Amino acid sequence: MATGGTLSHLERRIAKVEGFDVALRYPAGRNMRGDKRGLPPYPYASAAPARFTVAHWCETRFHRAYPGYSADVLGADGRPVHGRTLLSTVRATYR
Image (cartoon, rainbow, N blue to C red; front, side, top):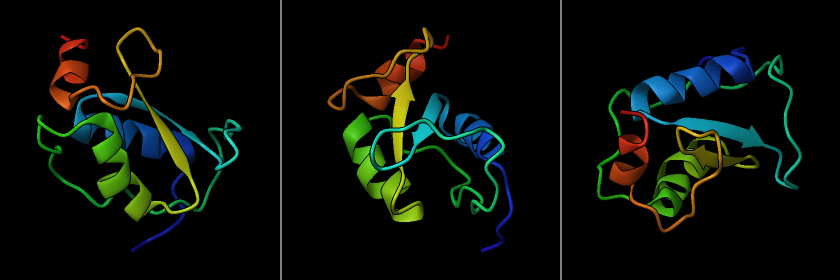
C-alpha cells in the first residue's frame, strides 16, 4: 500500500467512496491537521452496505485500515452521528 497522502486527501476520498464526510482524529480524540502526511490511501473502492451502522463501519473498515486513529462520521450538518445510526440514514442527510 502506498503512503504519503495527506489527511485532507484521505477525508475527501472516504467521502467520495462512502457518501458521507468524516473527521479523523488521534486516539485521544485530538483533531489532526489537514496537512498531516504519510497516511495510506483508503483501501475500498465501493461503499459499505447501507445496513451497516456507523459503529460497524468504524470497526470493520476504518479501524482495520487505520489502526491507532479514530473517525467521526458526520451528517450533512457537520455534526458527528451516533454509532447506532445506519449508513443509509447518514447518506440520506446529504441528498
